[in-house]
Length: 262
Ligand code: MLT
Image (cartoon, rainbow, N blue to C red; front, side, top):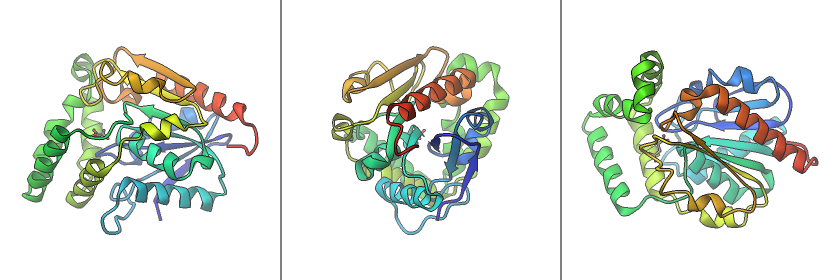
């Protein structure tokens, strides 16, 4: 079972963290989101306090999220996923579309890895297997932020690094294998009966907004936001704007189909 926090009241909003993170990455925004929503933030398997049971694909992680929502008596929720959390949100929507009121893709994409990306990930897996976890995490962290933000907010980078360093080799390797194996999710969006929010960072080195605009018109109802001062970590780089945009989206989704409530 997933370790999670639940805060606030109102429509259900699930926050899925990215890689290599855990639910504490949302600590700065949860109190604000929870003034208007019931915010559920799990540790994905192999992150934080959630166990990894053998090798887990993103679809297995999605099944764990569905089990958690069922346990909480939540029939429908807005699922907001940051990067790998967004890939997981789409895996969830593929399996449990009836439980989705809306999907927020935060610095994320529906596209599968291309061959070059898969090869890079395989090299990282080899590096981690040879004891390279800490240098890898230290080297990747600054690259996740817009250069100006990184320069002016060293404490935010240090906080993000401390969270990333908590992930152990096994969890990192599993996430990379799961991301390599994930399918393209364009079909999920084409069939979507729910709205999709796209939050994009202008300085994102992982999801280039210029290359991934076409996917923002795959589903029928899309909201596209370009965060001009963000890299890959919009929820940390522009948190007030992020909270306001995610709350507006959640209300839009839940007022659209009042029953069953989310
Ligand atoms: C993340 O932030 O979750 C990862 O950078 C995603 C990825 O490597 O594709």
